[in-house]
Image 1: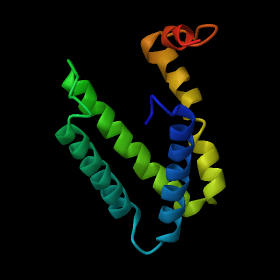
Image 2: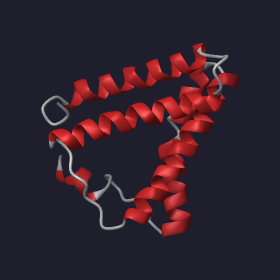
Image 3: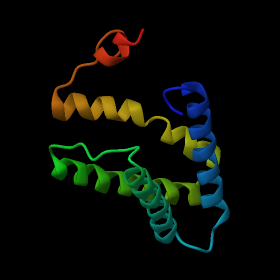
Image 4: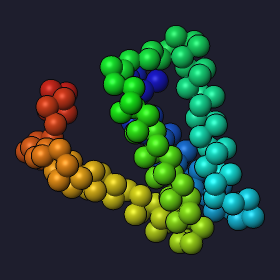
Length: 127
């Protein structure tokens, strides 16, 4: 679906993220950690289904970095859900959408990656 309908996929992802944030906000008595556990569990089930159906393949040469990315991603979701319990959903979403800016700053500091004019090389190739 993503390759055939990229705009529809983007809209579906935005709706799914908004629904996730709204559900996390509505479930006040459940606790942040159990919500993150359920969210990660559902993601694992979807990924397992994609691997089992052959629609996805395991392609990594550095599994340690993939594990580290998963840990950081889990921490980010935990903090995001915690923020939703304290802030209005709209403000939490707005702050969440600033993550590409922080990614660029962290990449500059730790990786020495400089931003390029016109986007990354793969982005330029698609134009």
